[in-house]
Image: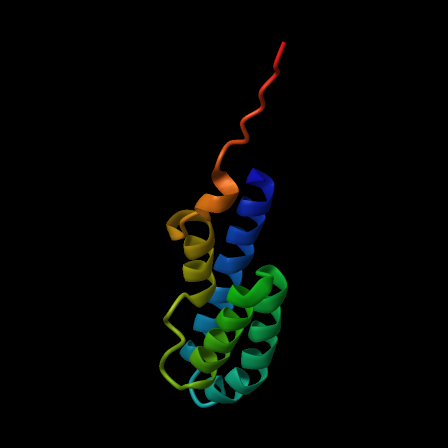
Length: 102
């Protein structure tokens, strides 16, 4: 589990850095975002499965396509949500009681 978390964090930091670099390139940067936004959304949905991954992919697409919002670290925020802030479902975390009757 730790290897998966570390790998996803590294990818998240890399993808956020790439998104921010496009903002730093004058004139060409906004056009690069047109290419980067769908790719980033696809990567987000592959990194994080399920409903939350789909929602995050839409958010990252919107964030990357809108000018001057590239500074938001969407991938890293999703990693933090998944592994730090998200509460575990209490139904899946309850211990199973096993009784052995003599």
